[in-house]
Amino acid sequence: MPRTWLIIDGYNLLHAAGLIRPRMANGQLERARQKLIGRLVQSLSEAALQDTVIVFDGQGQQGSDSVQERELPGGQLGPEIRFSSAGSDADTEIEQLLAKHSSPAQVIVVSGDHRLHRAAARRKASCVDSDRFLDSLDAEAPRRRETDALRRAGAKPAAPQLDDSLREELEAQFLSIDPRQLAAEDRERSRQSRHRGLHKKKRP
Image (cartoon, rainbow, N blue to C red; front, side):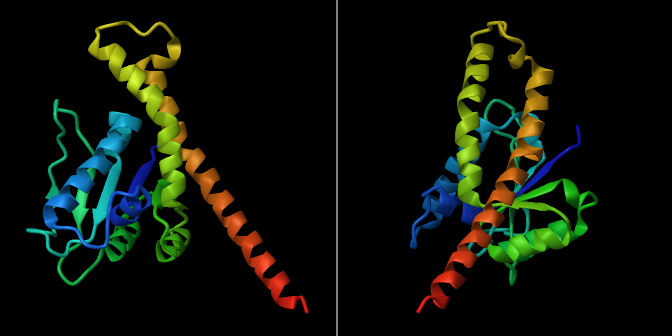
């Protein structure tokens, strides 16, 4: 199964999740970021999280060009958190990550920003809108919570779909197939919307 990397436009996803307001103090922004990370942890396997990078605009951050610690409570490794450096922004940082990536065709960019959709297309990467990605997370979260609850209770999974290796395989399929399908659907809806707009303009 080909490995898949996620590059997430952090504030774009925060907006789509309804976790951010126009004016927020640094402490409130940090809490919003932690809620977003928690939502990802509920839905993605540890293997998938380790191949995930979330990029935030770095304005107002101390040491904004550094990478945040990845370890979560309980010792689990979380996604890599990056802040754009001084004089830059998250979009530019994501474009640089795409440009440097050795396997861009295996990258999925999560953002509703058209600039990043174009950047992903240039590198043959996939891109999916933030709200569509959140819908996919919500569909995946119950199965993930069930697996975690069984493990905490020390119970052996009764069904083969909860086996570690199969779970990771399904997770890889979730990342590498479904988001690309969502991105294709987004492009088709956009095309149909433009077509309807042109049709309306031609009507007398």
